[in-house]
Length: 241
Image (cartoon, rainbow, N blue to C red; front, side):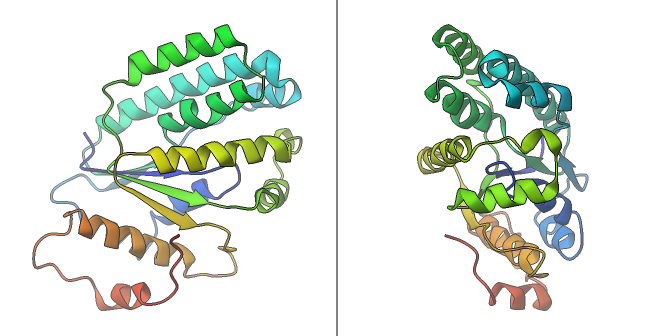
């Protein structure tokens, strides 16, 4: 079982993958590793999208919604198994809880998943995930304006994503907000509207905010002081909501 499990949640195009990669770089890596008592280091666990399925799904949501949701559900079950077998600090790019409460819920509300399909999906999810241990900290990368998401999606140039509608992104946004508001465990909301490439210190500043949260949760060893250069960063920009 991972000693610390950090999970990034957020809409399509918000920057989860970039965050997961930046955490593995210095000084972010050392700061987060300082919270481990013994674990085996830090590792990022990311999904590998099935491009063919995504292409078909975005062409015909109703035809492929159920198959797509079941595929990503089983994919994230495998990721959770790998996280359980890891003893260090695990960084997860999108959680299994988002599958049901954001994507599955949105597809059902938009009429793209039949009532019986949703029933089977929901029942399967609840039975399998009922006793899953939640992440140590859920970090919600939040963008209020879906036009920003649309711009980022177009900019990264994945062909299958170019047809994603603003209506779909808005529905996902609404359900992400609900998921975060209702989430009963440790959580942190981050303003992700900042252009991270125009602000080189953005990721490190956010990681410092995560560190502050972990410290309040009791993960910093007693008497341990944060390195001066990292402490100074905490006094700069604040990207939390």
